[in-house]
Structures are given as C-alpha cells and as structure tokens.
Image: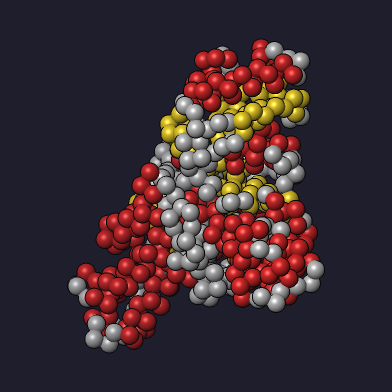
Length: 310
Length: 310
C-alpha cells in the first residue's frame, strides 16, 4: 500500500506519494502563500495530494494514510498546529480538515521530527532504533527517535535540543533565553562569528567578503585556503557544536547522531573535529557510549518520507 | 505473583519482596563489604533474597523475577555491571550468576533508573508515561522514563543529565568535563557555594557554622532565619538547579519532574523558586509544556520497587 507525505513549509508545500518501502513514487511542490486564510492553504494541500496521486498513476483509495510535517508546535494527538509563526497559524485543525475531504487517517508532527523519522526509516540512520537528527540552519532544529518512533513529549513540545544551554547567561537566543546551543551552533551563529573575525582580522581572507555576503561557507572556504583567522572560527564553531552534541550523548546515548543543513556539506572536515571533541568530553570518555556521527542523506525528501511514515 | 527487588549500594544491599501492586511485603538490608571479591557479594545478595522471601512467608517459586539496581554503568541487555567504581566492579555478570542459583529471570539497571521507575509505578509519578527523576546528592543523578519504561540509550549509558552543560568551560566536574549541571546543582556544589558565602560574608549567620560542618541544610536554615547572604546562596543555587530543569523540559517535555535527595526536604521553599524560573525560561514560556515539579515520595524504597518492576 501507499502513503502520502506532506512537508508544509512557509514558502512551499511539498507532497510525495511514498511506497511501503519508503520510496518516493511522485513528488510535487506548490507555493504556500502563507498570508492567506489557513483554509485556502489546506485546500491547496488537498489539491496537491490529488495531483501527486494521479502523477504516481494511483487513486486516493490506494493510499492508507496522509502524514503532515508542519513547522512550529504541533499537537500530534489532536492533529492541530498549535503555533507556527512563519505560517501565521494558531490552533489550526489541519488533520480533521484533510480527513473530512479524503476519508483516510491524517497524522501530524513537527517538521524536524518528520525529517528525523525519514532518516531513521530510509536514510542515513536506517535500522537505528534510537537516533537524533540535528539540523543546522537559521536555528538548531532537532528530532529525537526512540525505539523507532518520534519522541516529542508532552503536547509534542519536546525535542527542542537547540534550546538547551551551552552557556548560562550567554548569547541571546531567539527563544528569549540567553546561552542556548542554538545561539552558538546555528548557521546564523556561524555567520555572526565569521563577521566578528572579519572585524578583528582585517588582514585575513575573511575580510575579502562583504559582511552582508557572509554565509555558512565563507569561513570554511577561507580556512581550507589556509587562512588562520578563518581556521580559528571553524575550530571555535566546531567546539560549540560538539559541546552540544556531547550533551545529547550524555543525556540520551543515541546509537547515531545525524547532522543536516547546509553546513554539513563540509563533511569530514567538520565531522572529524566533532568526533574528536565528543570522544574526549563525553561521559566515560573513549569508553563511553559514543554514537556514530554522520551527515543526513535525504535532504528535503526526509520531511515527506518521514511524514508518510508517521 | 511476587517479584524480588535488590538495591545494591556501596554500603548496603537492600532486598525487598514486592507484590503485583508494587507493595513491599518484606525488606531486609545487609552490608555490602564491597572490598571482597564480587562473587562473595553476589552470594550474600542471594542469601538476602532467600531471607526476604522467607520473611514474607513465601518461597522462591512464588517469585517470577529478580531485579537489581546497581550503581555505575550497567549493560541491561547483557545483565552485566560494566563499571561501578564504588563497588570496584568491572564487567561483573551479576544476572547470570543469580539466575544460575535461583532459576528465575534476573534483570539489571542503573540504580538511578530503578529509582525513577519505582516512582513512576508506585510513587509521586504513578500514572505518568514520561517522567524524569533528578536526585540531588554527591552528584546529580537522573533516570528517564519514556512510555512507562526506563530509557537509558545505547549500552544503557544514557540519562546522565547531570553531565549536560550549564556553563561551557565552567566549574570542574567529577566526569572530567567543565561546567556540567552537576558541578552547580549537586549537594556538593551547594556546600561549596555555602562555604564561599561564609568567607565573603563573615557577618552572616552562615559564618556561625564551622566550614567542615556545612551541609545541604546550612544555607536553607540561615535563609529561613532571614540571613541575607544565605538567601542569596539559596537563590543562586535554585537558579542553577532550575536552569538545568529548564534544559530537561526543552529537551524532553516530560509530564513530571521529580526531585529526590536530602535537599528536597526544603519542599515548597525551594520548589516555588524552581517553578517560577522554569515558567519564565522554558521554550514557549508560560504557554510551554511545563511539567509538574514535585518531590519524590518513596525515598530509598524507590530503588527496590523499581528494580522489581524492571
């Protein structure tokens, strides 16, 4: 049998028809136009489901379930998007609305959780029972898989690992707290750290990039070209990232930690620094329960594959 | 049917016979004498099982399972105590040894995990599916219950929440890392903070206690008597403790967090400070998934009740 996976984003809605072996049979993407009433967005989601189904040469009666990954806080049990700031959604009964149209069960979880589940069923963590996906972007997103299922805690509000502390009273975080891991290890934080190094080291290669053009690659490119100031930024950033990973290891001892987001394109250049730090600092040191630390494989497809597997 | 719960400690071995409704029918305690060969300790554990069974008016054929809570790192799947420094045990096959004697299944978990399970099945968290027990003693111990079962991760090495960061590069921790929650929120840390305040405030009530007699109550007693320096220590300590609890809330969103250990005898005087901080700082603030924060109920009995429930 087949399932439908929907990755609802602030910009686009991606819909995929997924086989029983987690393969994508068809996939389409439509703009969200999030400023509209939510009913219109959900209506377009439904149209996209029909289109993707037809594209796969199927009818909706071939699909046993629809799964949705949404940004923000989702109440999986009620099927309600509680708060999604980038959609402007508050208490939207998305599951009920789609279920009334299609007469199949509709499930919902946070998009980071769905991405983690996607990687656990069909990606770099296939076969892992306990794994964590950390996504490095504007923030530090996370999804926790325990015993093969999403763990999200009370009212699906957990797994906000980006909002655990690195430094009490440290850098301000978007959540209102100071010193969260996200404020040190997100792509946004790396860009801030790179700009600080530009100012402090006008002689470095980093200073060749206009500050407003700095991105997550800037310091890695300069470091690989041998620039000392850039290399220091890389090492400082890797240490922040790895200190948070060490917290994850000590708290949850997952079999595997996957990293997603553009920064992970740095591959082994970054991963080897992370593994060294975790091994030296985790509980029990090199005799500790050190997980495999790898790059996620499925990219944006993780969301629809995971949503379908809810 | 009945089960046997064993709480193996560095000083004493407590054995209880536990009913199907988690009541203690009999309980005995014998000294561990941990310096002996482990075989002798396990032999005494077995004798204590027989004695407790007889005391309950039962025979061992009435007991379907033996559960053991041990200090240190335990491999629950292999039934082996991997490392327990205060016992001097390394790779001790305790389950196999007792199973050969009694011909019933023998299960094993870390003592902090067993205490959490005990509270979840029969204590202050009875009925909770997802809960965390934090024990404030020499260190900060923790047990995580997810979906009614102990979650301990790979090789049962997880749930070391005391060894997640409060302050990167902060106070030295027993684990070799710097800045762990344990180094700020354990009873040991509170005693250190109290002694620092004694030196800094020789005019305070705190200075009436000889430094070597400072314990976890000293600063609370002086604070309740209106001493300003002591009150500052209480507030600082509560803030450290609550910052770590906020991390637990953001990471795991449990329904309930229980606090154990002598410091919790301070009850609402301490708990109200913790609840206020968590509400002001957790993800989503007062709309977040704020758990009940309460004091554990079962004391030392949590270990044997939880071990029996493994």
